[in-house]
Length: 295
Length: 179
Image (cartoon, rainbow over all chains, first blue to last red; front, side, top):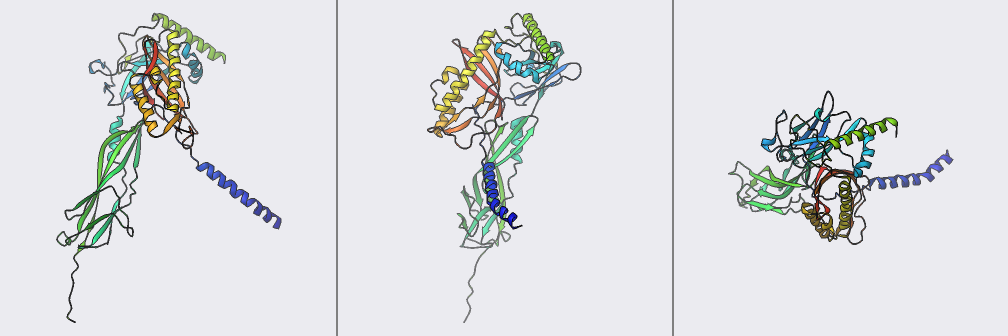
């Protein structure tokens, strides 16, 4: 038993060192790659193929806001609305694409590459059954998601923390400074995401300013969250009258303005209209009165 | 390669040649393209030009990446206009300028997989789905800033190229798939 304990004592530091090293390795997180040409405009269409049944249908899901997108997926020409106009054709394999074809073909057994070519510049490769004839192919434009609308919806429902107004002293005194601060939020950016189909939209909001209204007609604009007591907050106000005439308490409100931006499928950030959120608390302020006693 | 695959490739090659022959070389665009919504595809062949044009485009596209990579590494824009023009050139100049401001450069690490899907006499389209593990480096020391990426991102670009004075240049890029 003693020999076993001795071995444990000898091995223990080694085990601890190994565990420490492993935790160090696992905590060394690699950075995300740099994205070349970060300002490249994002595409607004995705292609899918349905080759079940008799024919082949190529679906092109387009953003509602795509220039010339058609909201008619049931039939007819989109020429008159300047909509998407697309053709598809079997792809010609030239010298420069032969290696690509030889590499890709085994991944699509029984299929051949076709090119979808739209007159607005959109092009894509699809793999269709090798027996497909041009007459078998239909192209359907499907109005897809509108990333900007998704972003606006996300923005309007962004999960802003449950912020409360902190104040000291708990009951204010006339002519004595009260300190205010924001509780439940550290001022960091808030991000939310949603995915519809193949489109993922990230929305990020960040505070740009705080407007304090102290309920007695006075206000303060600041970019500070204030400091929770016992720290000295830089958001201070000195009341000149009690809150007796204001139903016993002033309504202290902080209105936070958030800048908003969004991106689609990890692309470049685009601005959205800012939003504001307000948070209030009732704050009683009393007037101290001296009482003279006849001693 | 098994015999089934060889037969399929052979059949496809025959089909491709026949389609090309039907189109008289594939340089003309169809006058009545298929429209949105359940219209039937017209039996046309996407013009891809002669193989030599296709190869020119492919080589020019890979050269574009080399020049662009060198520009981001050395923060030197002097050769960018040799391989790009228009909006793509504007973005690259801005990109290098931004990097200079941040005292950063970029080591481009990508694995291209370009496909020339259209190659006319003066305009071409390349679809490239590439693996990206590029990373920021210090502009002076060229050492990585932070950890280098462990895994590659997949990015798909639709690249429009134009021939100016017989030289193929990248005109613009649309990011079809972002990481």
